[in-house]
Image (cartoon, rainbow, N blue to C red; front, side):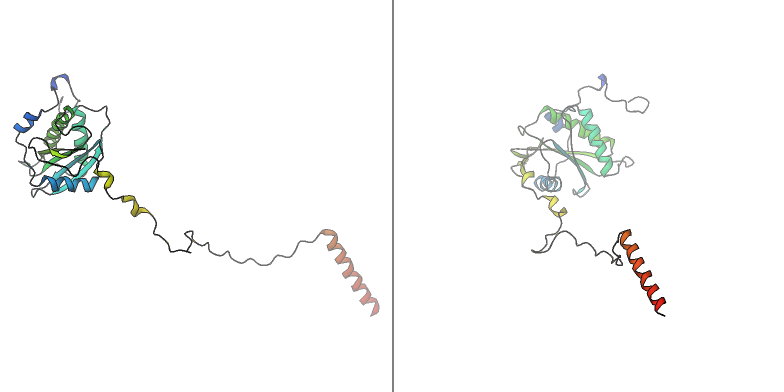
Length: 229
């Protein structure tokens, strides 16, 4: 940061990653009911592998805001992850920077393939979670993964088999509610067009020769009547 302006990462920033022992030493507050928390987030967002879900918990440990997003594979640095988290936090909830101490907690759920144990990318996301929470005035909370083996809270060892990274395929299809209602048999789905207004009858078109012939006949009849008188 130069003159209060964020100029991006520099060589002096160090390695933007956190190892699992370092994460444990930070004293991250534990979730009261991690299984119910993961299930709630999964039902809300149906994350697929490659999806990250960030949630904000209130003082009562309930979800007050959440957002899910995907990150391109070329963005693997903790700095990029921090910017992505901070951008989504700003969209879904106001900051608490004016408070003397944070009252809300931010938690991260990352759905990915591979082993459920800690990876280098998990370390980069852990660094990003701590940095984004601090810049938004929040307390840094748990970091969870969703893999084929199930869910796991890294650092405290709590885990479960369901949901997992493939459970999104079993979720409800929300687009069904956007389909039109089913009509009974025999009823056309195309609305009937309104009847066209009736036009006055149009006299048939007659050729010019026929018109002249009729005029001549009419004049002849008139001349005969005059002579008879």
